[in-house]
Amino acid sequence: MDQVDNGFTLLEVLIALVILSIVAVVVVRQVGDSQQQIADSVWQDVILYKGREIIIEKIKKGEEIASSGSLAPEYPHIEWQTKTKTISAEIPITLYQIEFKDKNQQPPRIFLFEYILP
Image (cartoon, rainbow, N blue to C red):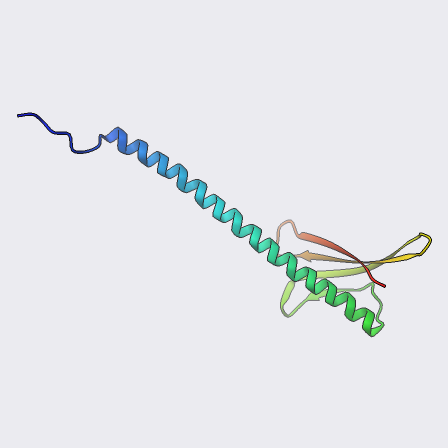
């Protein structure tokens, strides 16, 4: 009676597991990187919106632009600081800067936005 080979050898199974493991690691890493990029993008959008809001409110109220604070109660871990700069030219340009610092990140993540408003 002849013996019939109906299965895989141990070596074939091990090679298949190694290949699947490598593919799984690559996929998991890509998903993690994508989620981090999405989180960064959302964070930057929130900060950009809040920065504009702070500058515009200060201008509307006639308050001093150079000040600081936090985004509490929504984001108490994010601090901001505003400054003004005047750029000398034929027509002087006032540049409004707002710097955000996320204290939850180590080292702290810092974003600087600059606005030129009329």
